[in-house]
Length: 238
Image (cartoon, rainbow, N blue to C red; front, side, top):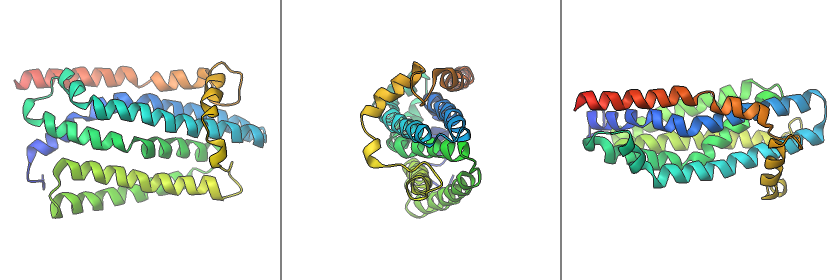
């Protein structure tokens, strides 16, 4: 409510939640599926297989983020219109979505990186980084909304920047520390996309379909239900 747009800004941000969740949760489920595979290989002490699984997971995260990011950026307003978003907030909501989805690479990189760290037994660092990100998000919201009066754009920028910080901290752990399956740029190549497809056929120790699909699709019915609920709210408001 500190924004000059007041209640319209709050309504715009809240109106995007169900749609963002629907687009993002599929890939969140994939990150959990990836952690299952990494944990299996880590428990078997098969470090080459762990490395292949981790690089496949991170590559899938980066390529997936480009796809879902493009959907969010280019189809923000049409998707909001399908939800019957009110005309007085749809422009602000679309602006928020576009900025949010521009940051999708760091969002998915954090979630896949956190899944990998938890899979190898490090549950503390993802929590620490998430805490740092949350505190930074609050501080940036206060700065960008109250001081610079950026309204919903400030909220979205704060979210993306805080997610970027947590993603960089996690990537640093995976790249620099020997106890983890070290990430290398050379292995994050286009060929990993083929590895991922192989994994879905259960021919490669990467992301396996029996883990990823149930987890990826598990939240979708809830998200679709929330979208329908939002549409009903908008119709009643009219």
